[in-house]
Length: 251
Ligand code: PGA
Image (tube, rainbow, N blue to C red):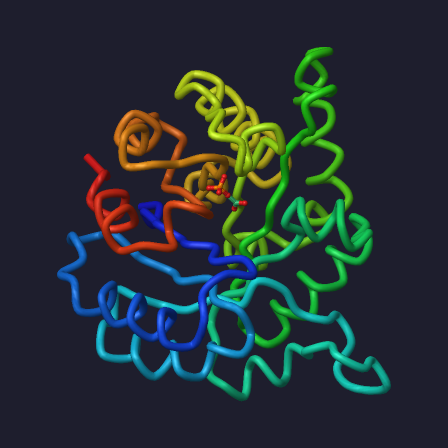
């Protein structure tokens, strides 16, 4: 059975007080059975969020990034052993904003995934095409290359330890969501690639989340698609009033 996941990505938003308040509101909320909630908080709030969420086994915390090297002269960076020492269990990797604004390549993302798996931290691996690729119809090839370059070197045991988030870049923060059919088509395609390389059993164990303008109004339709196992939610995860209905949108 694949995990149903509602993951929030707070990005560079919220101050200390509002972060604490939001983490409390979510972790005090009764989470529907079988649903797992993950809060992707800024680094500075991870410790506090981990403390707050430790009261609810259905709520976990993720960092939004990590550095691939163990330690060293990388001013301003945060290593995976540091995250591990906090007890963190999830890390978002390869978000399109990291790729586009901070120049992260498929190769760097691959190194981060390997290093996270070494510490038993689950990478939430983001992939997805920009608008021009969607417009010329080559989104499958584009996403397939991202998977080839960053995760398809893993063993099946390792692959089963990751979560994939399909996030078409044209839908992120734009209010323009992929239709449930567009999301389903891509998720089914990703699962078929996994099945070709690793077999049906592995393909059926991996949660594939959709990200890009998920809101209370569209979450039900998206999450009811056969291969959509949840969402990675930016804007709508910043307030409990919009994130809780998304957590409750699984059929
Ligand atoms: P959005 O962001 O929900 O605000 O579109 C999603 C994401 O970037 O993960």
